[in-house]
Length: 476
Ligand SMILES: Cc1ncc(COP(=O)(O)O)c(C=O)c1O
Image (cartoon, rainbow, N blue to C red; front, side, top):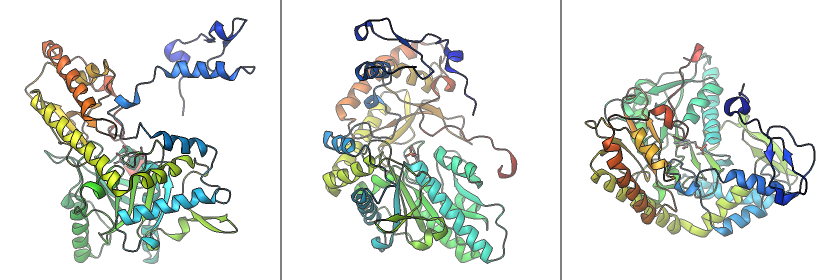
């Protein structure tokens, strides 16, 4: 990849100037080259610390799904484990043991028929977990096709166009044709009939998302599974489902126990979640689980020596920090089912109340109301032409709030929305402060003659809702 040198882009040609309090001689260090000599640790610390002051305030980031707060005890454990490499299961057997306990806890939470036989692992996040889930689907399909003497040249994966960018990456990196079901009218995610329409003998699987990144809505996983059961009965095609439960995997079990979306559905082969989203751990940890050995072909699994024994691994990285896995175990232990339920219920209460208050303001219309994921999207009413969602996003940014605005994908590229992700720590009080700021900027926006900002001004923090790339070549 060619990246233009930042100096060219911003004209920052000066070296870094060191505060004279730290040195007798005037001192500068190059900005983009390795300094020639060492410096005192406190001086280096201060330089880095000062520069980072310009980063946004993570707690006001309503764009991200990722945890921006952890208890001091979790942070202490992370510090204590900073040097532990997850792959060194031999040196850190207890860290490996805690990882395995987390997998078993998730297997039970997601109603695995036999939790002891579920296979799973930690990952750097849901993106890596999605790659692993997708690879397992592809490999299973290849084995089946080869056994039938059929071609394995053109695998495809069926999903809604609302999938997070990680699925587009999976398809691109691992040469699988992505078959996106477009949005239509008020349908903003995958539905059973549309999923089945795109399936054929080359379909490696269907991805169902439990809660859409675009608007927080749950896709009808059980309905999709039932439609695929019916497809199998009619045609013999047996197509597995992977559930991308990046956020919903840690919401639905606590708040929607009657919603059947997980291993209770025999068609669900694998599930991923982000430990660092509603799993309440700092970035980056994710989880991938397969219902049984059949769902994860053995030839994808590598074996490392573990305490003189055999430790299977399935991962894209080799080295990876153990601290987040330990923090995940701490959080499971600390909160238990009831603790998670209370935290997630509070998020849902804040989201639904804030959504209702925003709807009452007048110029906005809700797309979702925060009652599935504690996430909601809203638009500016169609009859309002003086300001756009992009103006609202820019105005809120003046007070430090990061509320992303973006357009929906095909076939609703005409629809631009704002989205708020309510996470642990975004309280009713903070929501009221955001509402006050929104109320304050509205008269100014209503005084504009025409919108001042466009999608281009707001790109960059929509968290995986970027438009899908136009593809070329065989996988187009
Ligand atoms: C549905 C969904 N899948 C996958 C991802 C990627 O997750 P991660 O950031 O953990 O890689 C996201 C991130 O927002 C998401 O919302």
